[in-house]
Length: 501
Image (cartoon, rainbow, N blue to C red; front, side, top):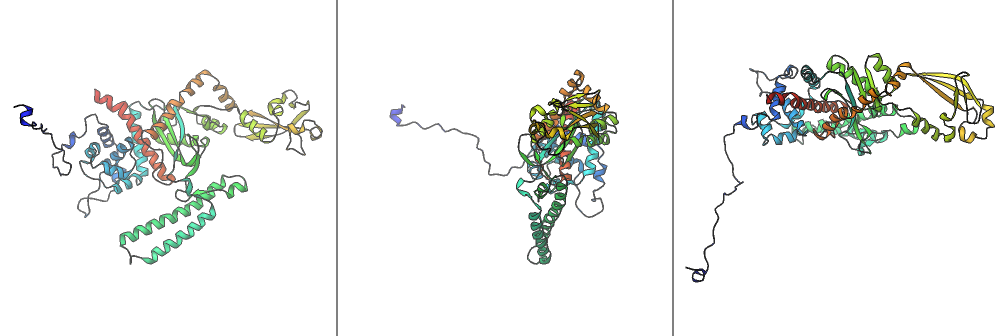
């Protein structure tokens, strides 16, 4: 029968497997097979299991024979956080969501659900024990030859605080908000539990009390900020955040300014392992070198043989401090010419009358100015690592000098002064050392070692902004990130090669 005779042939009906998502499925799950044998979550579980967690277990109150539900094993919670950070997850809520379907989380928990409150509380409740754990991991990596302390590279990185620039206020605004917060807390306490449930009433009171404490801390931090200011106008303009008072406005590497903490990280050059970490409020780095060495010694039992830093950490005080501790210090040190030129320009001194234009005669211990007048020795000032000798011209010569407006326009009564600095022998030796090819070669390796962990912590672990507020909690979060980084390096350098064999 042809098409014309039948009119139209029947269409071919395809039989396909239907996808029905509106159903419940029960299936057998082999938890042990959820992740492969070489999955990093297995390495984390094994590594944490071989550490001494007694400090964590000591705080558990749930015991056999006493009413109450079992506590979560600190080994599990520790492993969950390390794995989560290694995947760029720092939210307890997100971890709770992932544990519902992600195989790695399910493998760790044995298909059980861990409440995000439990995870969140665990992250901040064991600062001392976490520091001990960090040291234990360093001891393991040191025993495997991954840490030698022969050379340590140090650098700081700015990480944004859990606060916006809009929360920064001056004292008058903080006082107003503080008065309102006190009145609000008083009203909540007087209202009691008549209108709301007991649980909600306690939550409201806790929130009001935390806000009050934050504002009270803001006033204390404001005094610290003012102490670092110079000039009445700057003191009056001083501001702090009302939500994270311990945060400071800092310059960012990508440009601009933002509320931040400065995280100082020390990295052993042997295998790139972080041997020290500390969160600070300091916007500049030069005062953080000695504390960094102290932290390394605290963690490792001895100081490093050599410290390598960028120019932000190099000062005469630090050069002397490293020498006293027997540490070979490598770092970039400027000659101060740009700073001197800036000072001269601000004073209105013409370039042809900058200090470099004055000639010094060691035999007579005098300077001669470009106009041919002598400047005689006046006095000296002792500073750490340097002695400044001051020379001054006669005021009578300067008053009649035709170049006065170019040479010393802001000095109306006295003659022009020149300072001749003489470095301490240790400082002079450091400057000479940094001119050698050997020191330059070492310094050129600094960026690859010191800046790599900073980039990893921000890009891989995702710590570009703290989730918790306050200096202590920021330090805890930085410690979690660096602990995770070290465990990741151990997996790469030790566990995977061992597994391959």
